[in-house]
Image 1 (cartoon, rainbow, N blue to C red):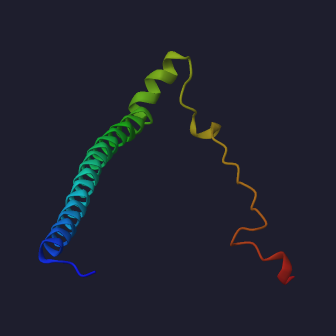
Image 2 (cartoon, rainbow, N blue to C red; image 1 turned 180 degrees about the horizontal axis):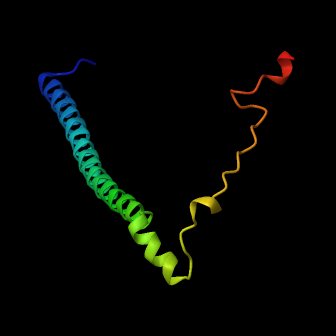
Length: 104
């Protein structure tokens, strides 16, 4: 059985509509992905700003200008030079300055 002209027209019309539907579906998916990406970029920029603000607050809180008044309110004072003792930390066996135990 051979297709007649109107059958070929119907077949090509269905094929065209299927191809157009695929293009529309792909474009819709791409737009949704672009929106999600834009939202994630906005959220990331917001989080980076918040992190920068928190880092700044930590640096300020660690400063001598903030810590000295707090320590004095607690009854603490700065040590004199003679009261400061530097204790060297023990070197670990895997530190780069110590020889490798396997090479002995």
